[in-house]
Image (tube, helix red, strand yellow):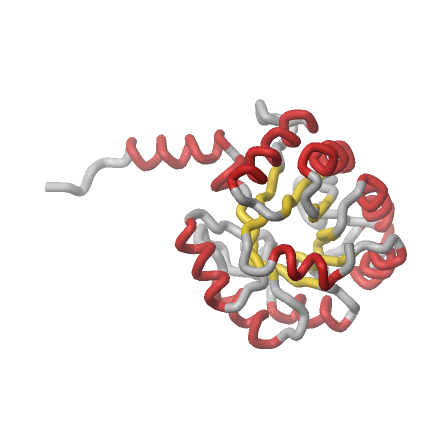
Length: 230
């Protein structure tokens, strides 16, 4: 899928992130494919998914454009950390490949520029997940097709908060020429609408839609807090 077609498909629409960790009951390509199908029926125009197996299964089940990534580990740079991971998810059918674009050390000594080059050599589009404006600017200079504030709150030097980092989102939209994809702790339809109103190309929502364990825990926490009603 070329960049213009992807942009026209997702502009002003919802992308749903369908991911489940290995310790979660919904983990597995077959289940994630059905989750993605449910998202498609609900109106999602694209899917974000993790790992070759899930990507292949979701593409076959839904036919929707897909942002692929490969999580390897759970700390540091673990979102598509190397060109080896890039090649695997490219071969699985991802249209756009998301990767950690922070300056933190990564395996094999590769750089974000190396990953972007590998993504483009495979005929895919590059989505830089960043945590600061400087990271977004650098990713754009290195050739990223899209930038998202996905990693705000996941680096020690970015704001640690439960809400979306709209400050970073707006800064990226104002400063960059490439399209900005809103992603990161978007919990409500109102927040999604707000991101689009700021000028984001599209919005990605994950846990608030596809993580029953997380959703349930938030309700349990809410109802077990002491009431402030007099």
